[in-house]
Length: 150
Image 1 (cartoon, rainbow, N blue to C red):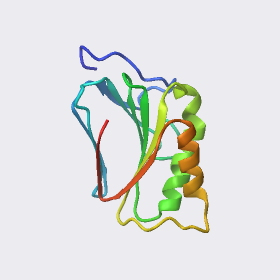
Image 2: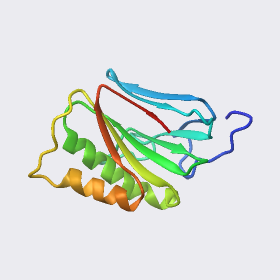
Image 3: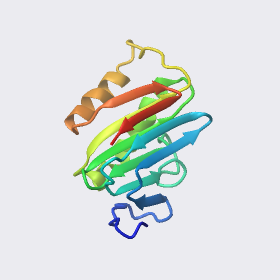
Image 4: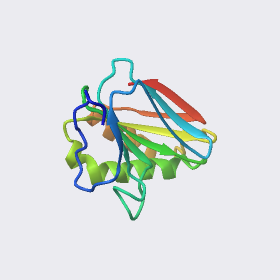
């Protein structure tokens, strides 16, 4: 942990915290899909591995990024092309973890090999958007690389 970063890891399960510090660039990558965040204000950020660490069984997304100073969370899924599966993984992860981060705004970030329009027959995507609106958050999806300022 960086000497000026305060501890903000909210979970009981140890060893899922990748890091907590004030780094200006955060990046996670899996099979050539990249989520990249710029932390220009050098807020304390905490990157947490969800898949096979915080959540061992069932559907779950890959990572949770917390901006501890601005109280904003990002559930991150790096996926092939099945956006509805990615939506389900994020939705399940939020349901299981929301009690520990209830003071945070909640966002979903999906990086796919290829972005297809959401299947309008399935309301999973729209339900996730609606749910995140209640938590003051949004869903972003992008092909291969998603970059944003946090």
